[in-house]
Image (cartoon, rainbow, N blue to C red; front, side, top):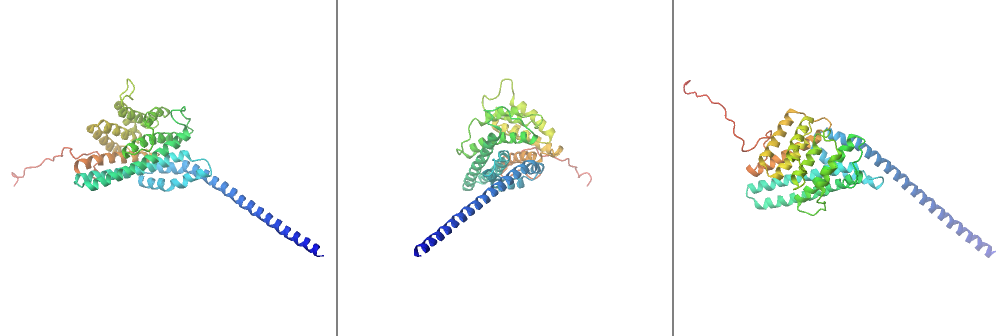
Length: 354
């Protein structure tokens, strides 16, 4: 009898143990199922977000003119949107725009610090100038890192320019992002130089970008591809092909940008003039830009690109003003300079009347 009871007891414990195993398996399966479902939901959400951003968010921003808002959006949403690369394919095209824009935000802060430094020097405040200069270099280092990330994502999506043929563009936005990626590469190199830090940007990026502009329709894109290429020619000794004149090309590109209402070529022309240390040519570009934005409205689909060009031109003008007189370009005076001839008005002699 005792042996029978022992047998029953052992069977009961076995059944309970088996039940525990079954419950454990069921719980594990259920939890695994939740993980699979969650992954599918995250992937779907990520794909939807990528598609929506490309089809609607980016075009919406490009049609607006609020650069500060675009800056805030790119810096705030980049981690969220890029994190979807953990559950679906990396949003490389979107990343080009996000990191290019957020790099521009950091560069804008660097320019502000530079103006602080110049203003402090003008006021003979050496310590304040040194501190602002350090902050300027830090901001440029951050800008270089962001631009370089944009360049990496550009190469991942379109292929490295030196290692692949020109990509086929299904729509205008694809070509625009390609051009934005080329610009990010050039900006990464420039920001790294300004930061005096070693970010790891290849020194041949400029020549690579210049060659890759052949993949873009120059007439369609406001003369910007040719302007970018000519700027590289002007900045790199020996880069200008035989029979070419970089500044003649920049002049033609200026005209195309002005006619299209997207004055981006003016920025490239100004950069080339700065590199040549030609202040009069630089002043002429700034005057021309100021006149153009008064006479021709920005193209409605590319308002932000045109506003960004104006922001850079204004920053260059501000730097010139602060260096020479200690303060920025006065409000409403873009295109004028501290040493412009003072307009005289005709006066009437009242002695005879009195």
